[in-house]
Image 1 (cartoon, rainbow, N blue to C red):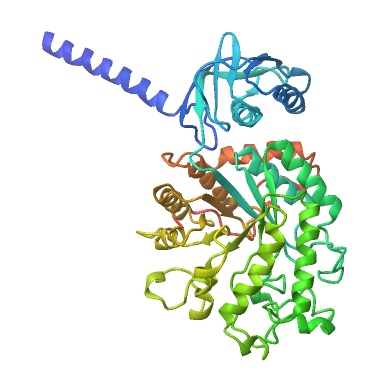
Image 2: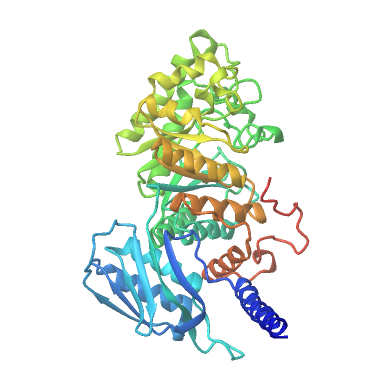
Length: 500
């Protein structure tokens, strides 16, 4: 009898603790994107969000903090106090904060880290409970310490004719929120040039006014905006599959500027091409407020069909042409960036499985181009065992960026390969994903890996939807199509599959 009673009691105790474990297992502690290096936050113990003390040596952080906390929380924004920084030495883009009964204490040596701390806090602050409307805000107890793995954490955005200005703004705001520090903005026949007003689709939306606004917004949020102009392939400012051409579809008299076949390449032997390209580069640099980098594209070019371009080795013509553009940039203290695929010979066994689009001729250019060009190495497939091109370009003396797209495992593998190879960083690419789960995956996974390569990025994307909504509030969006991660209630694309 005693043994039976003891067995029953043990069973009851085991069931009790099993129920506790089960209950606790369904409660997730608040999380932050990108995933911090150290993060301990309570799932249930919150304190009022009423006071923030910032320990920093950057006086400008006070105004930034007050301005943005006021925008985010209105009349319920916390009081902000600045005190001199003290404690262990921190990197410029590192931060830490503690949440306890005394409020929130942030540490960061300058405004860069302060921004990142406040972006992280915004993700875990919620409205006080038990009311119909917001009457207060609360924040979980805990502590966070964070710093990025990679120096260059970029995201590449295209401004297609189909895009609205608010979409571009949200992409920039989302990049800042997830602590990317560079955004490349590529124009696709959408730039309203004043020096070459006919080189675009009708009524181009990428005006000087819009660019200036985005440059100012980016600086305010801690992001550097970089222009891109394709100077080799993609001269049509369209996808090749579409057969569209921003210039000669409407103005065929300008055909000498482009290769005869499809007009896909710029005609490199034509001196008028160089004049035009150089003039637009100078104009874009001015509009983008003299950024430190300029992306010159150079991907997916075709073999030359122009008789003048075929009279000399194409690699020599290409190197001379890119060199002339490089000189324009270097004179202004700007570094060129370019895609890598034309520098990898198609059929070379070293690049089996890569998107190598170059010929033996164009691949030679990798040996003689200026070595301060940043190589943007795009690879959109599932992971490779080795990323041979990373060490190849590094051995030639280039700074190198891994450029994944929407394959989650590929993003993770490439980020780890960058860290192992000791190259420059990561440049995420969006291309046509301006909505949907693939867009969410690109932002969540790439930012997490660029910030912390030891992290395991989440596959659950509901937190991204919350953050996407928050930057929508910042943009003051009001129309139905502007809400949610899909433009329509019934998505026109398939749902996100993290195993893709």
